[in-house]
Image (spheres, rainbow, N blue to C red):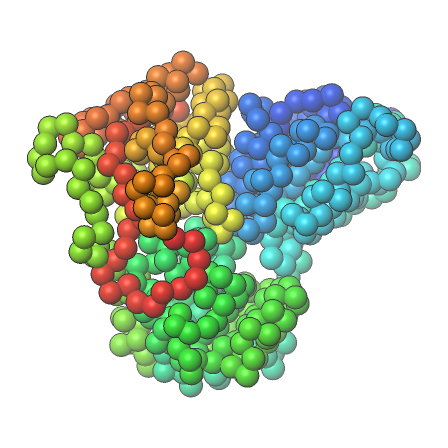
Length: 555
């Protein structure tokens, strides 16, 4: 067999893992991989900013369950992708970040864009490595994908020295690599039996899971667990924690629970650190997590209330518990928690009117935008909902729903929504993808409308335009008063729809709620990426009536 380039060994590993699409922005040090992708049959979706590539890989991983691959060039290319890497880690997404790197043989000489890349990315990823031998590139990349998929999924980084990518490796010297597979750590049967028995004894148990077991990625598994265990199973993936509008009045249910089982849901600010008033002071807890340090953190926070702590994979533990289920009659508790999660009654006075009722020029309220979007989602055979942004993003999460959803996640970062929508459309071309975002959010990656048009991605980007960074506006108003507002205003004259049209997208401008249905219908029928710019009466995130205990977390 002929010799193989190091770059070809990298693409061999990708093909073996089932990768057919990667997201990238071209650069000097990764040109050998671009060349190898042609022979490997791997599609490169090339973007306008490196951060967009990582955001797309994140959404791809969430929607497909396989590795999402971002390929960035060295130094500034890599550092441009750091923020979405943090988001991918928080979202528990198996992202493979490949970066070009200066030649291994030139280390310490001041080579072009020489940078200690893995030292920078190490705190943001599950593993960061820089291969030392071209013959081992296939093995190293395959091993990295396995790490990304296993345990709590998350990003890994492989820095690829340019000289290794160019090196020709004789076939007999190539180190064989296994197909990347997800490794599962099963809980001990004694732990399963003990947890099942404790669940059966509890009157008001709650099972909380993290992003990797959210409704999009594990909906059927969660439904089966609810039936088998006769207990509420709730996924949490928002930085607002118990204030997540998608959870309705769930905070009140948590405050009444007598047993909380954390299955891969880390105990942190989103759960009020396990303290009162967010938790019932008499509630006991069980923790199952694949990461020992998070089990130890829960032990330190919960003290004697922690009844059992197990290091094992959350999905493996959930499956095992369903097999070890014991009868329990808790219909009233199940109904109570379901009602709390469904609560959408707004607290009196929480929405401020911006114009007289029925005024022809009144901009849309967030609830009116969400209602119009929900009609589109309800009519779709395969709807995908993307929610991004601060206050408007919270309205979207609370008042729009679809079986498949991607949000900006526990990291609290905004700006990836357009990128998520592009990846969703490429991953599921027949789906109806709707992304809701604020006017601040759309500005992060506005140029990616051009990427969407070039890549054939179809989606509706609905921009709630209140001409400000509303989350910060809300905080400043609350903490400092209207005379101390600073750095929150955006220009009301900006036409994001016209900017998107200039990049090749369909565009519409909506000034009143009555115009929304037609604008959305025309955007759908356009058959390409669309920007619907909606003048909006900006509101603070929704606050529900009788929402329960006040937890920690961003407001």
